[in-house]
Length: 370
Image (tube, rainbow, N blue to C red; front, top):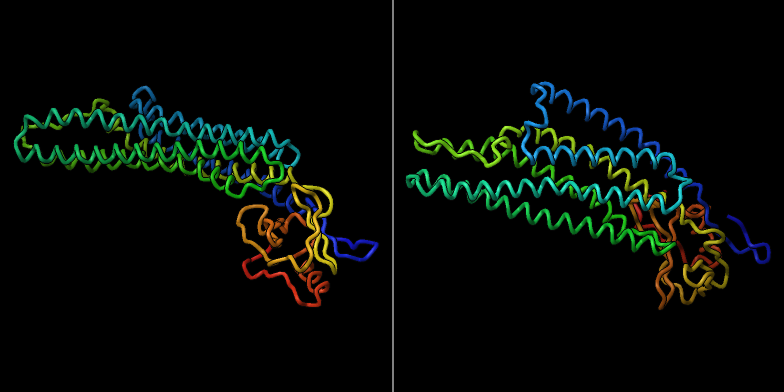
């Protein structure tokens, strides 16, 4: 903060200090995420060993694809974490955007095993339809019930695939749109990217739990209702029923993957915001009004008679809450408090002093201002 030497007007300048500290703190949290990966892998290896260390060659194709894509996503997330840790503050914006693209593409790859599971469900439903034709009425009804459940599962998986795929595509598109606007903070864009790296793991994890439910509840329940001399047909890929423990492990590991990927997105996007921090004066307050740093037109004076509300706007993600100044018929001007070299109370004092206490900074919309 400084005062203009000519008329002692209040001036707030852009300052990277507080945002740099926050980004550095997020980078340090990467060690915690890497530790969670190590713990998760130890747990997976222990359970796999307790199962008799079954080799991937004995797994069903859907299980093999699921495990492979989770490991790929995990490796990508770890590599991104390490690169971000080294380049969080100093790396170029293009590097951080490229890391986000790689992360989003890897997240989209988690939908491949979901598609494989859906194809398996459709194939099994087709097998059961032919099997039910030669059964008694009671047994046939039991099999038809299982076919119906498979049909519902297939539709649910298809809808989940479409929604999750659209979210991933939307995240990549919004990243490109955000990248093309140099000073944009990208509040909605960043939210979509975070949603994308959480949605696909959730869909895959839910599908894995569905394998457990199918193998231990639906198929077993249908078998008990068949006639004594009738054996329930196996899946076209029969090993999938024996892989339910592996899918339970995958569903648990996917939580670690989503946590690491979500942290990577938060750090990368915060670092992009830091790299875009402008230089010079952000706000000037004097007896005539305010001068704001307009992104398109540069410094722009707004008389007090044209100024609407002067308030705060809450945001949870970095760079946090914003100062918002209404400009009459023009769009509101806003800047994160974290960008400035002054605290909100100092801005409030300057506004009050230059308007004889007729105007003030309204911080009621904020629960907490950093």
